Length: 212
Image: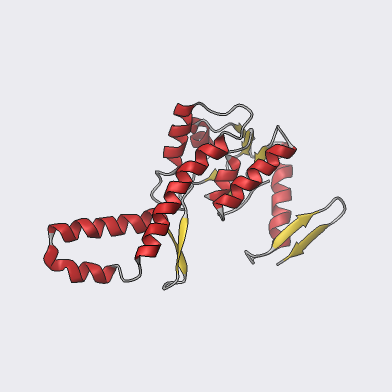
């Protein structure tokens, strides 16, 4: 069962490889949202179980900006720099004005954003090829392009869209008995973990341990 707004893409592909080592029929259940790095993990599954509340998202790396103390989409950083560069070329007299708009984006942040996007283009095909029956090269390119084309990090990919992309999805009606059981389990986890995003849960055979 996978619910996450994202995280470390490298960790996601390691988890995917580990899951495939343990289970050839690796399956992911998405009760709510599995975005960005979580979508990357879901791509490795032989089947992604979804319903009306389920959503995947674009695989969109985020770059931490120390000056603002927040994460920003790598695509957005590149877009604003490239746009202002083009504006400056057309109107050199406005260089100082445009330069002030880039005060928070230094060369390191720009290069980090470029590297992150380039690595994402490598990771998506890599994780897709973990499947027992991986998609062909044309499908890999189509999925990679689609998952990097959404303008917003919060964009959602519903069941029908995932199926159209060639992601092996399994739809469960929202009122089906199995989905109701899965949703109840998801709700219990959400309550147990609480509102703090740093809480973690380890499942054992006899006990669930929360820490964070």
